[in-house]
Length: 316
Length: 288
Image 1 (tube, rainbow over the protein chains, first blue to last red):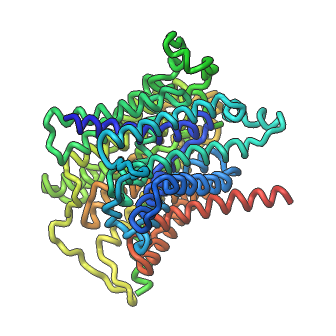
Image 2: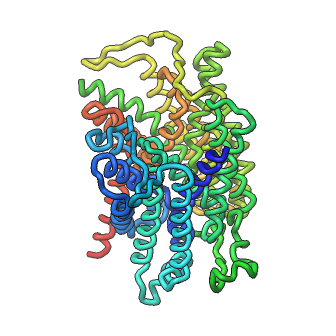
Image 3: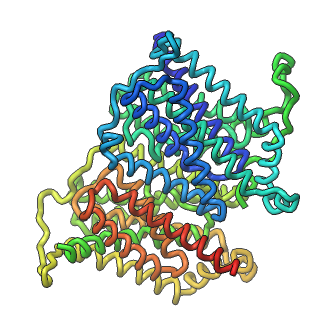
């Protein structure tokens, strides 16, 4: 029971890293991101290949995972600058499928559909953080760090510029800044977090194959952000907790294993429809920074409330 | 060998075109990407299987019943979810995301009811084969191609000649002006959605005819619908038909040359090449 709880919390931490990255792109950058799965794949396969074939320590390896996702993301985003928002989302979607296809077929590197088994756990110096509490601690620290990173980024001058660009890109460019640059950097940093999530996931599950990293994962992360609240700080976290914890509860009502995954899938699809219908700004939309309790004041001054829910035109 | 493969690809391409025509009229008139389009295909195919194999109906009747029933179901979904959201002025990506949710639910429901393994629909009957020069083509393939092309032609005639069709075109062209001159735009959109759903469900029935239905065909169908409708975006119904045929043929040839696992990657690469091509070519022209 205890180990199951730890397992759920580790998954939550990993998905939170993915969701806050997606929120940076979708919520603050206003770009429809259907390609998170591809960058998760980049991070996860970098981890799998490096740690099964070389004896590189974890810290440089995770930096390579994130750096690779960052570089690929910057290049992709830079190439997508002149596209209109519909085509932008279709290209990110297409990119995910192309990446999965390449992983399926580049068998000498990725061993194709069979996947890469036996990915070792994480060793930090003498510490062996493979399973259980140690891994949870690491994942939780990295999830908090990711949240903190996005929080600081959004409050920085770059974040203000990004949100201004999202709300009115022509007006933004009239102030003499480059909307393209803000978009490209936000996209790169968002998918860098996806690379980090992928790295942790590969080490934690110790097995990776092309089917776990594809379009379904992109959709799941997108759902987490949309359900929680696009462009809110707490939204992706709430969405992730809901979508990871709630389906796991279904295990306890004794469903046969064969339909368990499908019922979970049906549940998150249903949740997506219901939230978009009744609360288009997401669960935390409008609640995000309304009143901060005294004991949370240490977080610093309250960031400006987010006037743009997704029900206004995110992408013109 | 190559002509054989191209012909087989063209038959698949007819089904792609059917999907793409439905997808693009919904996208043009209701201004959102209907990501549940793959779900319509999936339900159409599995209901065809259900009527044919479980209830032992004749195949044409099974396809017709399945198509009509699927259309009714998705019209209900559209009037319960998509239309109210649009009436409230939801952003188009919110409606698209809701349709993605519908797709996920439908796919899971099909998996729960029918299982996730591919199911045989033919029941062991072998279709008659015809020989044309060095291409062998089965009676099933001929039926699929004829039905698909005929439905697209019928749709085209409907949109061009009837009064409802004219109203639909007017609403696609300018929603507000069409409303001003007395068209009930909301109802027209529902008509358009119904037509699109009918075509997609029919495509599902036709796919079921080829022999097997499987749980994963919904996402495949959605991909093809997106790719072909973008490829044919400038040339209307004929563009969708040509795009579908071309994609089917190209896919089959590349699958023959490499491996079947490249199929989805190839079609999405074509899509990305097209998008980048048009955007960058147009930009350089403008700059000149």
